Amino acid sequence: MSQQIKKPGKYALYLYDFTNKLIAGSVSREEVIEAHKKLAGSKPKDFISAVDLLVQKRPVTVEMKKGINKMLNVFYTHLNELPQPVLKDDSFLRILVRDNKEIIAHANQLKPFIKELQRPDTPSPQLLEKLQKYFNELSKVEQHYQVMENILFPFLEKQWPDHRCFQVLWSVHDDVREELRELQKLAVSGNWDLKRFNRLTGDLFFNLKTVIFREEKILIPAIVAAGFDKALDDFQAEAAEIGWSFVESPVLKAAESPTRNTAGKFGNNIKFLTGSLSPGQIELIFNHLPVDITFVDEEDTVRYFSTPKKRTFTRTNAVIGRTVQNCHPPESVWMVEEILAAFRKGEQDDASFWIQFKNQFVYIQYFAMRDGDGNYRGTIEVTQDVKEIRNLEGERRLLNWEKK
Image 1: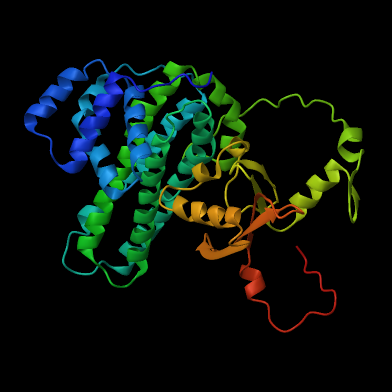
Image 2: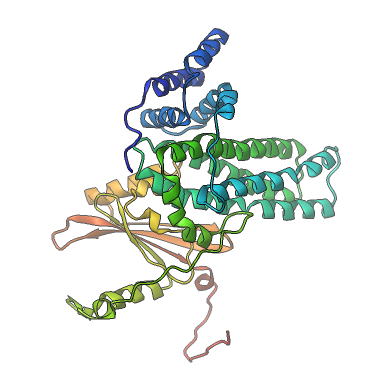
């Protein structure tokens, strides 16, 4: 199944050169006409390969994204008119398309607000409150993006050598996230700025539609053409666990669970210097700690993550075997690279960050893991919500169980 898209073909190479010219601002009207003629036989996978080549040569930047947008605008009609695959009802890809339809429907609910707000005076508190509720609801698009980033992208990275195009799509996801955050702030700031509101809503509509166009006109046709669509249905349960933005996941038939070999899981203890534990006990310990733990080996590959009752960041089994660099958005991957390089060289042993996230105060720590000889063996990421810990005062010396 894997490696079906190999060396970029003539169409991809031409698209790559053409997009570089667009980024440089050196494309004439005659060259656009010529490009249409030369790329009349191109397929969605050619556009994937072309963007992959771009990302191989340069970091994902605003200029690159603008150049890709221009390129896709030039070939919008061509891509839009290509035959669309027929998707089975309740398949992974069909649900993705249905969710897109609802995302646009919810986005269009902003249009009456935009019209009503085109006045010089400050909007009424009632209107601003409605605006806040609207943006809170539209922020559910985050779940769609989580499914893409934690299920679809990891799966396809293992199938396609030219998977780097997903870094660009992830970056557009982050643009939507940032625009929604800024619009939410604007609605509650008490300092209304109509010009900023119009600019942000314009960018929001553009980027929402950009993501959907690329998913439906490029990504999905290429997935179906490569024969990966049926394999994606195996990830329905994980997608349901994350949840789509505005549509329900299909009711899955309960799979027959094989009989557990409890002797193997809770017997055959592994001996440590300070005791011994069975694999089952080790798993229970990790999953009952009030922290998220992720282990990345010395080759920068994700090998394990714990599953506590309350996770801070989404993790799915699809990330196992994925490089840690591909688990982060392109704008922040440089920081991951810097941490791992310092750990590998022995220059640093830990790194810490803390952020506000979904009403949590999240403390993120990275620890270099070394063997007895000091050799680097990987990195452990530990994440926890420390909001309640930060609020502790005084002392508690007596047992005091609060009713749940």
